[in-house]
Length: 341
Image (cartoon, rainbow, N blue to C red; front, side, top):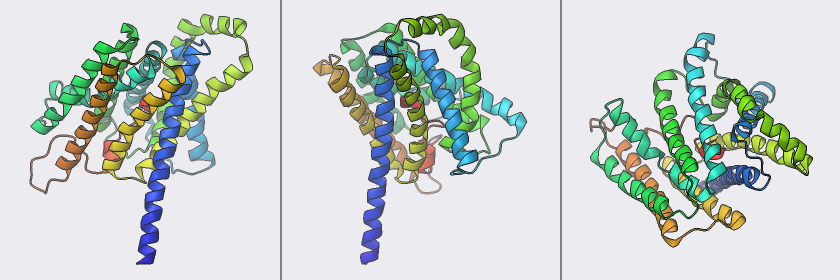
């Protein structure tokens, strides 16, 4: 009995440790990105995204090939172009839009909009793939949509470009998650192997646009900005932490249950909003905070409904894409590398 108690306590401690380090990496990456755009005046989201992809590609290579902390999931060369490359393109668009939104709108507003992803995923599957969803799934989306609308209407630092970037980022995240089922069928990717294969493709896709669109601006920034060395350290450190975020997601998935992961993910958004407000002091209206809270509660309720439907006994009609285990609750790539970067 004593041994069982010790094991239970260790399991709880390990879960808490996994969640805290996941929160730490996620919030730090978001805050650093916002700091880069706002405080360092490095207003080049494509370049920042490219730095993150390069750091993630190197990090994944070291973890899998050098340190051998994770086994490599072998993918046929033909499948790399036929399956991985299209996913990498959507992955790239998703990350870039996230950074573009951070460039123009506060962290609190951006994080709230990103919580709209469950709704866009369900709607896309219904419209494009004609999949049926239980009425409880649709009902659980109401507070999410209502909270987003309230937050958007009352946002004091509203910017249309940032708002659209965040909204289309939700669509990109949903598209990535949906396409993963068909394009990556037969491959059981974890977050590290996902980055290992997709980050190099994403770098290749984004490098030319970043150079053409932001190259002259980056050169001018290097010539005119003070404290270049410390600024570059911050920029590349954000890339390293972005990779660490993916590694932490792998750890937290294997240390928590599906329900815990869902609740912790929504609480993480609340932590990111609070920390960003303490650092950047962006004005938040009372009704704006209420809208954010409603959205997060709606996301938690949505996760609970999906979990309950997944626990229905055999023979009970299931909703499409109902997660059958905690791995399936996670987007193909850290989605909140969504939040992440």
